[in-house]
Amino acid sequence: MDIIKMKAIIESILFVAGREVEENEIMSVLEISSEDLNRIINKMQEEYSLEERGIEIIKINNSYQLATKKEYYEYIFPIFDNRAKPTLSPAALEILAIVSYNPKITRPQIESIRGVNSDGTIHKLMEYDLIEESGKLDLPGKPMSFSVTNRFLKMFGLASLKELPELPRYIIDENEQIVLEEINTTMENSTKRIEEENDGE
Image 1 (cartoon, helix red, strand yellow):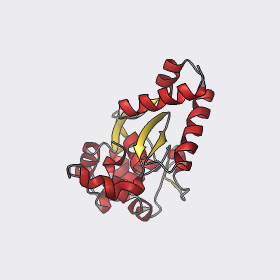
Image 2: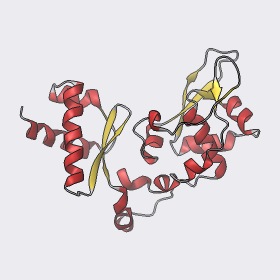
Image 3: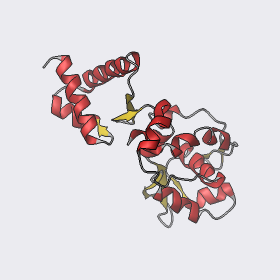
Image 4: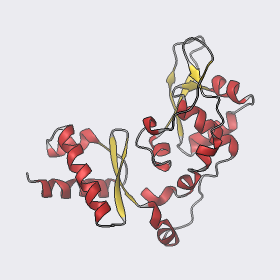
């Protein structure tokens, strides 16, 4: 199969899916390797950029999604119904920062860092699909841990957590590190992406 046809198939899959499509799903359809798929999509991303199109292909962990470009939000928004958007309070931003820098962190650890009960805010962030339960830890009491979701990455324009800016860390014991640096500014600068959640949907 030639490259042009494979590009057309990838574009069709991403358009129809309307969600993140995992690499292995596309690889299975096209019967190509991960390296070949990444090379083809990188080329498509370059072409979309050079042609100044209104759409782009974004990568989220090991998945791809077709999305509208954020700079055209003001023109797209009036066409769609004004559904309720997530309203992120300072407390919500703080918890997002803590969880994003500390995957598989537990509720007691979050509350220990913040110094206040966080049940309500954690529940709200789960409703927004920005954080999720990521399994019980092998610790006394088997506490549930939390991680950010792919939707968090998409809304904040991150391909993976590796793209988070470096921050100082404070070791609370020999096995784990918890971020204590003030990082609300980083999250607040990205809040607009949360409010524009329909861009890529």
